[in-house]
Image (cartoon, rainbow, N blue to C red):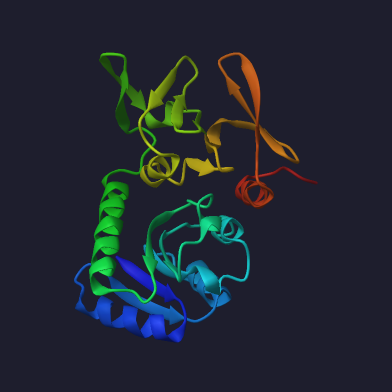
Length: 234
């Protein structure tokens, strides 16, 4: 996996030493500010993993990650328990407390490898998954999933015809879905981009069966969606 580091100089040096010992990650850049990290992610499309110091961020984390066209997996560096991070689970694979130990580094990288492998297995909307419905296993095409909703500890896959409760976190599902097809539009919803009927100021419209539903969309995500679509104009 190609990776970059965005952290203070001491943490960067420590992580560089650990990465040099690892056969799983290849370091392509080291930066001491979040602007440089974002610029590098925009320029280099083959970055799979970022070691990112939360205290180094100059903007809100969700705004930072949602501003990226391609979202890599992220391992966050922390100085202590920061409760503010609990609500921001977008693309976060693991957390490392500073000063980072080699053991904790290895565990986090192993976890990142598992997520990376799952993403590489398949990236097509024609791929199929099996989900449990009662005592049965039901086969679904990924492209037939319209949206995924998280409420408290419950996550539900929604198709035109049915709803499937599953025992996953929204973050875990997001990391396994093809980013070309799905996008997380707020803390609780992932939607199939091809199923969006309208993009409004504060919501996106989806049709589920014969019902039109409105789902709140974060402003940064709305802008990404608008940049992503082809619009006819004079």
